Length: 412
Image 1: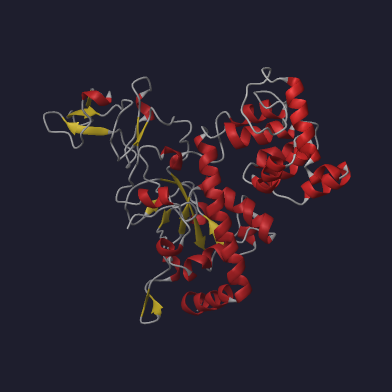
Image 2: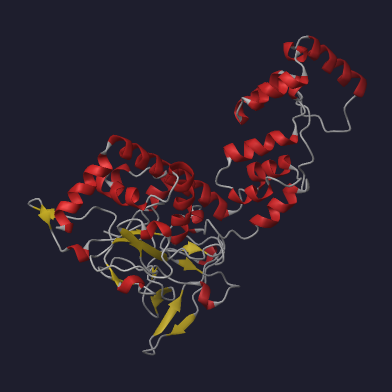
C-alpha cells in the first residue's frame, strides 16, 4: 500500500504537467521523472484531445527512444498529475519531500542539529527523501544518526503471535511532509506545551490510520494507486508554509488598503453608496433605533457584549441592531486570533498600530485564491484534531499502556 503523509493524508508521489509556457524542469510524473504520455506510434493512455489544448512534443531519452511528452492545456483531463495551468511549480514546492519519525536504536547518540524534542524522547527525525511510489526502502539525505535507508508505514508495526515481526532496528518510521510537521510543532506547543513526538508515535499504535484519521473528502477522493489528481483539488499539493503572495496581501490589509476601509453600518437593502436619500435614510435609522433595545446600552457595556461573542454571533447581532453597525478595530485583533489561528504571520503585528479589520477582511474574503493558504487551513484542522486525540489518550493512560507494550516487545 502506498504511504501518505501521516499528518495531512496526501501522497508524496505527486505529479505535475507543465503548461506550454513553462520550462521542462517544471514537469514530472509521480515517480519524479519527466512526464511522458506515450512512446511514439503507440496509442495514448488518456482522452486529452485537441479541444483540451494539450500538446505532445517529442523527447529522446538516454537510450535514444523517441517519447512524447504530455504538455498540459487549460482543459487537460489527466488524473495522474496536476495541471500546470491550475497551480504553479512554486506553489507546489516541497510537495514530494518526505521526512520520518524513527525510533532510536540502543546505540543512538546525539548530533549537533538535534532539536530538544529529539534529545528528550526515544525518537528522532530522519533526513529527507524524494517522493517515490510504492517501494520498500527509501534513501534519506542527509543520513541523520547514520540512518540512510528507511522503511516507513502509516500503520503500526506488525506482530506474529504476540511477538515482533522484525528486529527493533527495522521498526517502520512514520512518514510526513516536513511542512506538515512544522504545523504539528506549532499546534503541539500551543496545546500541550511541548512538541509531543512520543504521543504522535503512539497515536499510530492506537488508531487505524486509514479508518480513523479525520481526513476531508477531497483527501479521501485522492487516495489511489497512484494518487488520483482530481482537477480542482490542486491545493492539496500546495506548500502550506511558503505561500507566494501572502505577505504582500497581509501588508495591504494591515494598512487598510485594498477595499477594506472600515466596517459600515448594516442596512436592510443593497443600494449603491452615494445614491441613498440621506433624509429618508436618517429617518429610517432613527426609527430603527427607537425600536432597538440595544441602543439603551452605554458604549462600555456594548463593548463588553462584543468581547464575549464570536464572529458569527457578532454578525447576527449587527443584523438586528444598528448599535453595533460600527465595530472597533481592536475587536478584529481578537477575531483574527480566534478564527484564524493558522494565520500565524499576523502575530507579528500584535503590538504595532495597524488596521486589524483590513487583515480580517483580506483573510476572510480575499485570500481564497492562495492555494497554499487553503491547504494550510485544511492541514491545521487535521493536525489540531490529532493533537486533541493525543491529549485525550494521555489523559486516559492509553499512551503509557502502548509505551509499556512497545518496551516489552522491542526494547528487551
